[in-house]
Image 1 (spheres, helix red, strand yellow):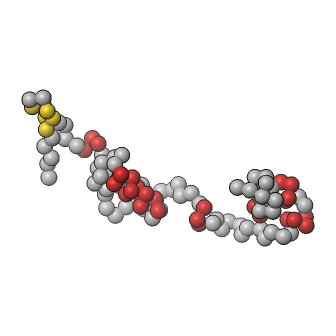
Image 2 (cartoon, helix red, strand yellow):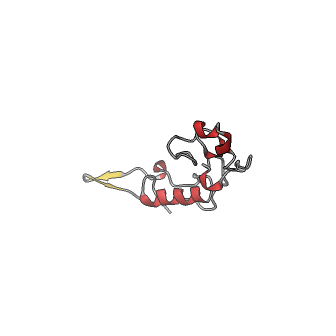
Image 3 (cartoon, one colour):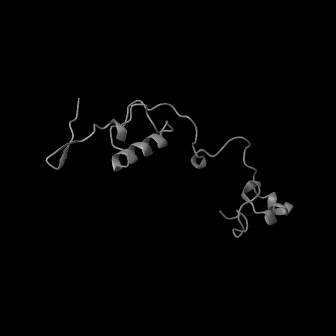
Length: 107
């Protein structure tokens, strides 16, 4: 992201200015300081423990449906994982008969 004043150098000082522009008082005074301790909600990464989602995701890991489920949870600032999400080791072991694998699904 470039400096708000010159647009050339990367931002490295408060007010969105580069080092060169920040130390020129006439330039620094043109830009309002950002409010302290009030993060811009659109640009804040969420990396905390959110609330547990209300419903488990029944899609297999790695599928498009599972990725969409995780994206929805992240957008809602929920925990990405539900304790009852479907996992690969929840699937029954295949039973081999005549060279093909058959899987019995229990309800």
